Image 1 (cartoon, rainbow, N blue to C red):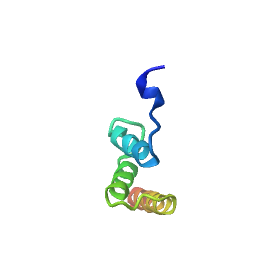
Image 2 (cartoon, one colour):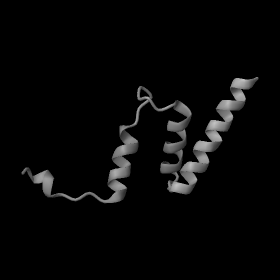
Image 3 (tube, helix red, strand yellow):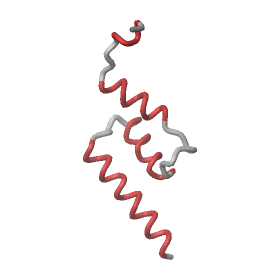
Length: 67
């Protein structure tokens, strides 16, 4: 066991590392990525807000494809 194995990260640290690890090269669509980052940076990353933001991004993408 290394010294890092005994460190327990907080939820905020885990989410921060996750958001930092996201990149444009991932399989995540750029609008989704932007939504997650914006909510996180503004301190408003909650389950409800994330779902609302993703739905809005999906709606914008869908309406953009139909024109």
